[in-house]
Length: 93
Image (cartoon, rainbow, N blue to C red; front, side):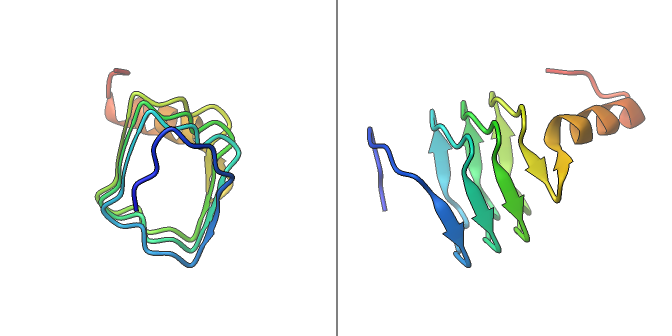
């Protein structure tokens, strides 16, 4: 399915969205529950307030995206990234 230049409120449950690509999309405040997100490519996307629960994110790629308020299993994504970078000496892009 291809959606361009449209506005939709998403509450996705029990879905297979593997291999999906998202460019220049606003996902702020959206919810994804028990979703296969493997192989996702997410670029230049607003993820503020996004909730992801029971999702398969294997091989997913997120770049150039706003993450404020996004959580994975109740933990802020920005906190997860900061913790990982501190432990691995990774530099912020």
